[in-house]
Length: 127
Image (cartoon, rainbow, N blue to C red; front, side):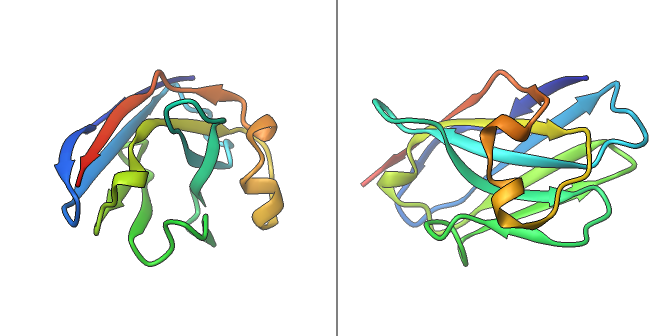
């Protein structure tokens, strides 16, 4: 599985960006996708996740109500629509693939549970 993320860039506070991640070579049985981010000088953290069946979406509290994750099974693509951006959203954003069954927020938000990672895309939000 190869993950290619795109859509990062510079935005002003209050603005929007849309990230995309194409999962090439995705097994039909793979389970879900997640977005994580790594702010400057900090650890990588969970942002949002969704299963390919769109059963349940999970969000970090810091982005709930502002970010929306969605998946397109036909295009093997996961999106992250980011609205009402804040300077603290500045980070490198990574998409990641879950090959196996996962249930609940704890499972989807756990970095170690993901099997493949994309290269990251920079998002910078100016105040």
